[in-house]
Picture 1 (cartoon, each protein chain N blue to C red):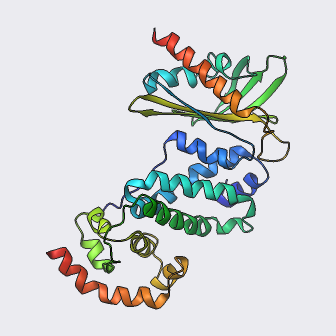
Picture 2: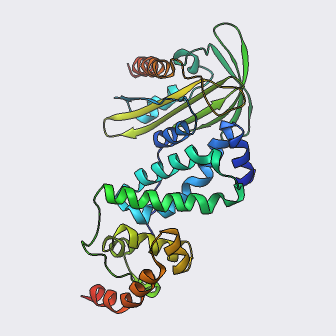
Length: 163
Length: 154
C-alpha cells in the first residue's frame, strides 16, 4: 500500500495502517531529526511522530504527507535541541558551505558547532536537497537573512575548521 | 560521509501510536529480566498471551506471511471469537480486531527491560478507544506479565 493510501486508511480508523505508516515514516524522520537534535534525536523523532499522528486526521492531502511530516520534524527537532540545551555557539555561527560539509571528516563535529536552527538549514539543504529560500520559508526565517549568512559563511567556516 | 540518524525503540513507537488513538493510555513497567527472556514470554501469542492480556483466553495463529504479519483467532473469556490482524516483531506486537486493540512493546534498558502496553475496546469506525479503565487494565496486564517472566526465570 502506498503512503498516501495508508494515510487514508489510518484516517478511517485502521490502526494497522497507522502501524505501517509509522514504520514507513520513522527512518525518514530519523534522518531529519538526527542531525538537528543530535543526542536528543530519539526524543525528537518521538515528539515529531506524536505530532504527526495526533494531527493526521487534519491532513487533507495524503500525497503531501512527506513534506508535511518534514516540516513538523524540523520544528520539533529544533525545539527539543533547544530544550535540552545542546546549543552550539552562543552566537549563531555562519553556515558551512556544501563543499565544506561534503569535505568534512566528521559531520557531527561540524553540526556541534552550529545552533539547532543552522543545523536545520543545513539538513534541509544538504540532506533534503532544498534550496535555501525554500528552507528559510520552511523554518520561518527571512530568506535574506539565510542568504547573507550563507554568503558570509564560507570563508569564516573554513578558517574555523582549519584552526 | 555519515549524517547522524535517530531511531525509535519499540516503547517509543508504542507511545507514538497510542498518541494517535484517542482514549488510549500507555502503561509502562521495568522488569529486572533480560529482553530475550521477557520477549520469549510477551511475544508468544499462542501459549503466553492469554496468561497476561485481559479478555484473551486462547489465541491461535491461522496465517503467517513470514514477515511479521499474522492473522490470529482469539477466544475471550466469555467465549466470543475475534479475528485479529497482527504485526509481531522482536519487541513489538500491534494487533486489532473489529472490537479490540492491543499493543505491546519491550526494549532493553540498563535495569533490565522496559515494557509498555496499550489497548482496549475500539470505537467502531474510528481509531479511538472507549476510555474506560484502560490504564488500570494495562497496568494489570504488565503486572501479570512480570509474574510470568519471573516464573520462567526461576
